[in-house]
Length: 270
Image 1 (cartoon, rainbow, N blue to C red):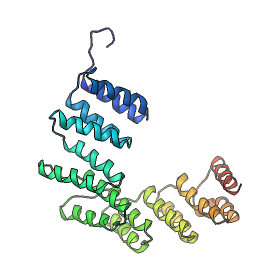
Image 2: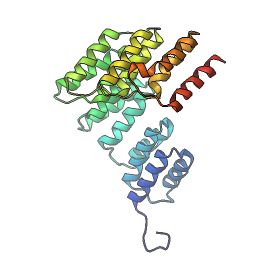
Image 3: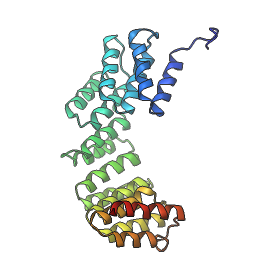
């Protein structure tokens, strides 16, 4: 391209923005965005929409809003993906009014919310005082004949676990399995972290056993949740025993992983 015989186009630049975002090279991404805004790079609808997406993805609120406003200022109509990116970042920031503003714009523009839209709404509610609304959104999805995915169910499970509503969380877990969706490590880790935080270590370890029997392999987060809460309660000996007995629980832990966990306990103790 540099020899002048092949000129970059909007798709080339769009791919570059995504690459910067994926590599978390925020400074380079922002510098490139300034070239777009200044006109140094010919601006196309694709580029401005991409700026909304990558800034939302990297959780940059002001930059996301700037790209969206520039899109509107130039008379370019947002598409459903762009609007979902706005709802996603506003939802993550717990900005309910802004989220509803975009949602209303979506309806007024003739767009139909997608599963991504609803998952973002559930995420927002799951982290709020109105956490029960996350299940209301799940019911709305089902009423519309849509199929929730693992993210949908995991989000509602998180909402209930986060607020100590384990009975409701277990009910959603059962619904998830009834929907032929296989719970993943995120699902199980949510239960484990909640039980450990409530000093219910027997229940937490039982979940570890259960997930292993279901063919779901624990990860570092699984083990960290349990040993960290043991340590916070000054129960380091029990944390060490848990690590040493992982083989009895039914999971194979390498010597390297066991050493890492024991070192983590030692650091928490010091």
